Length: 278
Length: 256
Ligand SMILES: Nc1ncnc2c1ncn2[C@@H]1O[C@H](COP(=O)(O)OP(=O)(O)OP(=O)(O)O)[C@@H](O)[C@H]1O
Ligand SMILES: [Mg+2]
Image (tube, rainbow over all chains, first blue to last red; front, side):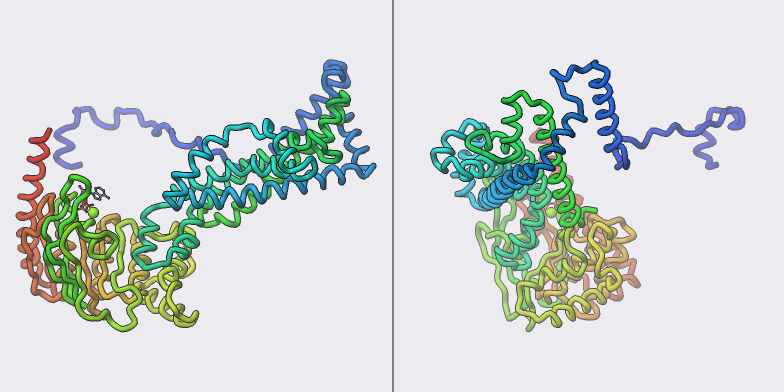
């Protein structure tokens, strides 16, 4: 023990003090993936719901039992209608979402890169983004026809704006130091865009895709409100107007499954494209 | 190739940052720039490398860059500026991809600079897997790969701990002795300046002017054997810097 410390000690011999471990205060705030919990939560909820329906606690008028909804779903699958509804919806969804996202990325990029585009387009985007696209559906029907056009257009417009906002936000957040580095090595404008700006904005663009995909599924039901014979949305709307709640639940579950599938796909894309984040 | 600065002045909005800077940086010479914080050292380096236009005066090049130089004025940044999504090899290749080089030539250059910076084993590693010192070695390798005529280094070792800094200083001296390069080296660290600088430019507080140019005529390789002399030079530099720093402090107190 050094002289300094000895001089400053309080005279009590150290053996007299009780010894105890330092209290642990770290950990937490970092959820880790736990397997099997998600399916278990679903299973428990469905079992409780089924039991509630069977025992009469939940009246079948209020909410059909899961088994009834499943029965409706099986009928749908066996009659071959499932595929017809699903394919019509997927076609609209994929077409609308793809073009909405591509256009949104292009416009978002130019807002992120060019002063003129930012000055001209950003106020427009801010003005049009909050308009519920469902309200414009009658206009879309007039502009793009009662067929596929208006349905694809609804989804396209719905996904376009969130993608624009996610993309230009991502471009704005690319580390300026990296861009300066690229310029200092004499990289061409295209190289800087391709090798620095796009990869740097990709995390934001992909999380924008997650949001726009959900919006696309939400808008599917609205898009199929007018003049759709097939489609998951049309199926749900028909079931609703007939008070066929078992079919309604089956259709809603189908939408939910579509959402899960899209979410999983984007998760895979993130895992591959953003591997560098570790 | 030499660099000549003639009466360079610069400012932003109403603040005058640099006033009438004139220096020459000769080929194969390392010029260190020291000065109080905010005196415009980084700004000066941006002007030298052509990332900004000076308000007055001119930055000139005399003579041709060495043959095969792909990017005559090349920076090494304090924060490394590595692309996190590219491996060590990919980060170096970034500087080469815009030039007409065959894949074989490119990979030969990468091999060479990785060997010179002792990074060969880390070719495929991503930046997040590297320590700070190794990241800066990658940035130095990337700078060397384009065969610069002048390396513009803005506090390249400031983000590193002192042991790593010592090692990297030795590495830089080693690199210079094997193949002399020209460098303009901004630092806050006087020990770095006297170890690496052939000439040391001491700048005044803002607006930055050249206050004194200290020449150290001991070859880089022999400086560690002349510690007394180095110590004395460093003290002289500190005296100069101290006055500036104190004056800068006093100005702030007057304003406040
Ligand atoms: N882009 C800019 N716009 C406005 N002011 C700037 C800009 N860049 C630098 N300055 C100002 O110029 C002055 C000099 O900045 P500079 O970064 O060159 O100083 P420095 O000597 O490198 O400082 P440090 O030692 O802290 O790195 C500072 O007062 C800073 O606020
Ligand atoms: Mg600086």
